[in-house]
Image 1 (spheres, rainbow, N blue to C red):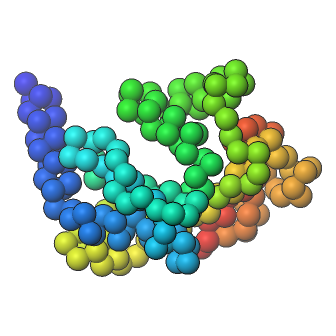
Image 2 (cartoon, one colour):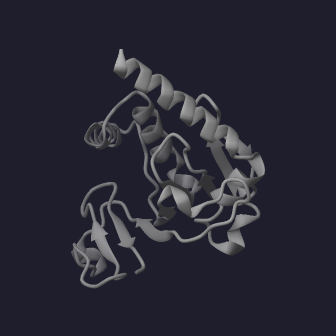
Length: 191
């Protein structure tokens, strides 16, 4: 009984949090991860009260921004090149089915290998803005703090083909993660 009540209370709190976020503030904050010159024309996707994703603003450039999910802990906003959308969308679908991180990796790996899911052949970028829940005032959209991370997907890249190390060598230095796989990417996390 206690578990059911905890779940019910949690669902109510999530719904209340989502209602406190005006569309204007959600649109504004969803662009925090985007390079400034790309913000105005980016497509913005956000979450409905029932947790589904919808397009909040249809943009005209190649950037897609995902608003923070009010049902998740902390702030996590991402913007990425439109060619990454099939990969990103599939991950969202699998997580919505209740799949864990390793299952998502495994399923997408199989789908890429079977030709059911494609990755861009050219380098494509993902911009991330993240932090603790309290960094954004959801009434005003004012931001106080937060961190950024940059990811450049280069499918099947290796240390040998890029000259990059396979782990960070200094704070903020680029390094190659998931080398040799379809999801190989350069990680850059500024200090």
